[in-house]
Image (cartoon, rainbow, N blue to C red; front, side, top):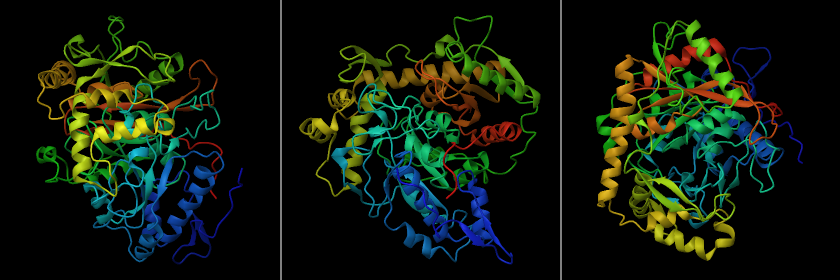
Length: 546
């Protein structure tokens, strides 16, 4: 094991007018504090970038070998050097701030965009994804690409969170040494934006960008003690992101504080002609405005768990005891802050997997305990994948012979020893569809998803009880908000221990505030009030400042 070394790359720089250096501890520093240090001359973009590179070398490549960063940007130091004389400002709020992006987000530079697939190893993008252009315009240093669950967990049933055939396995920084006999973490890092989350939790970047179709931002944020925003579909452009399902896909920030998430949302939320969903976008001028400690007072928060209706309690009823305790403590904080807690079950008509929305896919995963069984999968995901991925490969991918999902399936079969450790049953199912979304079953499933999750689910629930937000434990409410296309904000909620019947160190559990379309600002305000009252986030142990 390589011992972390101190470097002159460390972010200890003489403050302007100060008699002694001021040290900023990167392992737990909010992005807003880092921006202030840059603006006040306490540190340069180059020194900051070198320090993150040193931490990646010490903790991601060596030490606990978290494996959260799939590849570094070879131009990162050069970009940082060009920004050394540019301070963060209203016009360029991210000037000099190093940010990682998930490796399914296109960068039109020397970095490959692979979605974690061996089939796309070396593949590059013709241009920057729209959100990467916005980050660069705001002055961010794109530090590199974060590891992920391969193809955003749409390749194989029961693929472990954080695993890809190209990038290997991401580890949770709160329990990096606990692995089962298959080499899979006992405490999952969450997925599919696992690397994006682990890197922020471990202090390997100032912030990161992940993506979500259903739970891929919220789950890893919960597991790593972070804040994230799963936006309304259409708030952030998806142009240049390797897709799963265009009716649900979105990108979002992963940060250490609510204010940092709001700062990044200011940059990322913009209309884009390349993504028609953004034409309906509604947003405030500034997501950081009115973030106040008393924002919870008088807010009506729905808790979908009614003691008088215990059989209809899919969100809280089956929680492990420690998760139940942590969530109960979070609800008590909301009450103490002046929120009106409404305990009422979600309408059964809003249950997921409603009529005509699922299909059976044969589980061919050789390492799954359910190998050989038919497994229910979302029709919308399977059908939209082929059409959307084919379009991405045609319009965005270069430096690769792979042009269709059929090509990927064939490559994987030809390289099964390396590419198919967990199989590709979902890709096989998707490849059997027409690929043009004209099937009746797809159109019906999409309509039924929206009817159950939105009209009969979130809308009916919030309207009946006059709610400002719905509180879910961890990422437990990801599916209903995602299928409705509605936003969620995750904030650290506490710590739990134990997984799969095994003892573990303490690791984080988040709480989620979900709401109606375009309500991100309201949700951020509620999350901020909770965050300030609890200060639950603690960095992973054993990763000291270098």
